Image 1 (cartoon, rainbow, N blue to C red):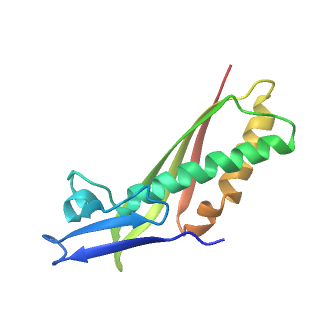
Image 2: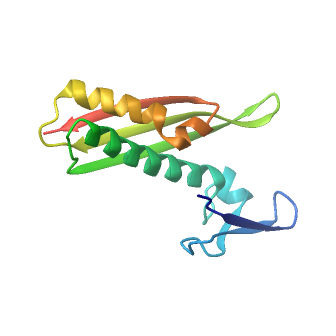
Length: 141
């Protein structure tokens, strides 16, 4: 299975602008720029897209982990925060923090913790990062 996206960039780093598109059409010439990446400009940026991919991948991986022990989530809400820092070699994604809140009927805290930790280490997007990945989790009644 392969999934594709494309980027178009025009101009220099600080004043240039670009667009991102995906083969699925979910992103179609979506704006990104220096200001959307390093300031608060309108549009997206690579780190935001990585955060969305990680949150989605982790949530699906958790659902799979729960299914292996006979549990089905009523809801899984994951927020991913990607940290981009200036390092000696330029900029580096140094960390990703996942914040999870889930409603899982019949789940005990130990089963929930184990499933969440397995999902954190096992989701394909987690395996892409050469960064510290942390997880806060909350099981709602």
